[in-house]
Image (tube, rainbow, N blue to C red; front, side):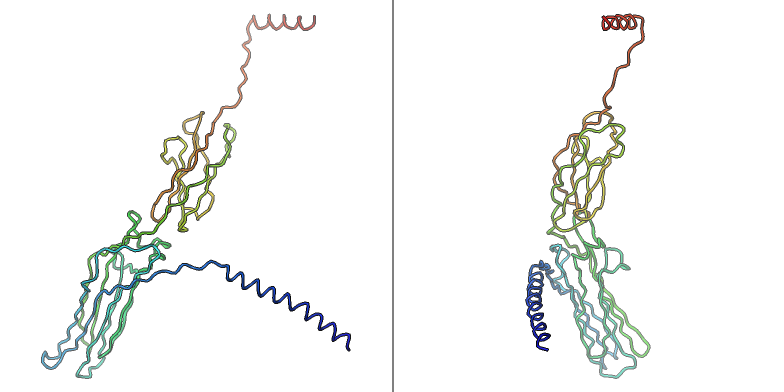
Length: 318
């Protein structure tokens, strides 16, 4: 019995340090993980909606007021990682009469320029008499850039409108009001062009029978955007062939067509991100020769050729 007890104690002593080591290692791994960059939120007051069911003096005629804030601008500048939250305060005033089916439906929408059916974000609320609420709709620039929706590539801008729509109903009747802002534009900043691509890799001399030859290059985008690669093979710093979009750090391969025929070529690559269109600098060049290969001159079969051949033959035998 003592024998088994001693063995058990020894096993516990052996396993315990291993467990402690594993726990410490796990903790260290968690501590070493990079922190996720938090998106900064900006709150903008867009306006207010007031529903007045009316009173005895105006024969209980409902009134819906929608007022956009004077502080609401037509142009903003934000970083590509920001989140902009637009807020609208809504209120349905107390009614002095208990009406049947009395309710105010209020919608708050952000939608793409000239396309009301495509909503960037929206919220809505149903208010009874005496209730109030704050409606919110946001533009998450980071998500919009990743999905490339509602994004105007030229100039890195987003253009949209804000709409507030309210319907007040009671006793089977309905009253409605809506207002839409002019175009609001957000200029997006904080983007970075892709890094300089590496020098193209591949053979420096190519022959006609090398029809499977490819050249490769790669780079990274600091913001993690997809990348287009532009290849120049005529040494004029003009892109002859675009490839993409490719994932960040994905190798791009190019199979040349040798359009100007045999001779010397200079290969270089540049990159641009697929969202903002910002371009990198050109890579270092790679000089390549497209060669016919070694040629052997065929002898001309003439009378003089045979005479010289025979003379050389006798000279060798002597």
